[in-house]
Image (cartoon, rainbow, N blue to C red; front, top):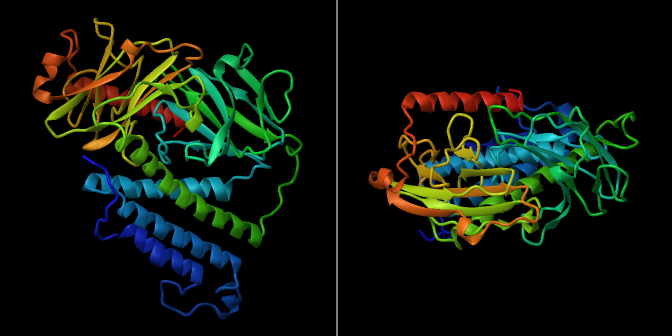
Length: 442
C-alpha cells in the first residue's frame, strides 16, 4: 500500500461535537442544560475580554483542528484505524492537560505515561516518568530501583522526535548510577557537575524523562522515584491566578496540536513511506531522534491479510534488555495487559536453532511467540536492544521478517516450536494483566 495524504468524507461525531458544542459552550458561558438564561452577574466573565474564555475557546479550536487532521490523515481508513485515531486524539488531550495544565517545574511531581496515555511508540515493558524542569536550575531525583532491569534517565531540550524541534540534552544510564545496598539512589540534576550521581541540566532543557524498564514480568517491578527542585522543598506554592490558568490552557491547546500532528506524521514519513511493508531495517542508535544512547532500535511496519502472517526472526544479543512490540499507525502501543502484543527475551521461546521466531498474525496460530495485531491490517513493529554501550549487532544477526500464508506457518517454523492451547493462552493473559496492575498500582 502506498501511503499518501487524501481526504476521507466521513461523519465525525463525539470529538467534533464536543469541540464544536460542549467546549465552545463552556468558553462562551452558555446557559445550563435546563435552558435558562445565564446569570447576569457573571456577564463580566464572558466574551472576548476574558482571557480564560479566550483560552478555553483556543482549546476548543485546537481540539476541532486536531480531529480534522486525524480525519483527513492517510491512516484514517477502515473502522479499526478510525477508532484508533480518535482514541489517540483523546490520549493526546489527556497528555496535554497533564503536562501543560497540571505540572509545575518549581513544585515538580512525575507524571506516569501508562496504558491510559500511550503515545510515541511507548514500550509495554516500561513505566515512563516525565516532569517539566527549568533549564539551568538544580533538582534532586531520588528513590529506589526496585527489581527493575534498567533505570535510565534522559533530559530533553524541546522535542527531539520532531525534526529540528529539539535535542537530547543529557542522559544517565543504569550502568552509571551508584545504587546503595538497599537499591536506593540520589541523583543531582544541575548545570554544573557535582560529586556522586549527576545528570546535566543545561540552560535550554525543558523536561526530564525516566524509563523504568522491565523484562521479566513475573519477577520485576519498579521502585519509587521522586523529584524536588532544590530550595523549594518547604516553600509555599503560590495560588493560581486567572492569567496563569489562561496561559496554561493556551499551552495545552498548542501541545495538543503539536503532539497530534507529530506522531502519525513521523510514522508516515519515516517508516510507512520509506520502508517496504513486512520488512525490518537494521537496528540502529536513534538517540538523535529522542531515544536513549546505548539503545539500538529497528522500526518497521506490517501489512497483512486475514490469511497471512509475518514471521520475525531475532537472535539473542549482548543487550541486557531485548524486546519486540506492535503498535498502531498513530504510534500508540497496542493493548498489552489483556492481549499479547509484545514479548521480551524472557517471555519468548528460544528455538533450538538459536533464534526467536515471532509470529505476527490477526488470529491465534497456537504457537508460543504469537504477536496479536488485534485486527489491524497495518501497524508498526518496534524492536529494542537496551544497554548496548559500545557493543554492536553483527549484520548476520540483525532481525529479519518474512511474510507467509498462515497455512504454511508450521512448515516455516522450527519443529521444536511449542504449541499453545487456548487454556494456556488464557493463563498467559491473566499473568500479563496481573503484572500490569501491579506495575501501575491499579
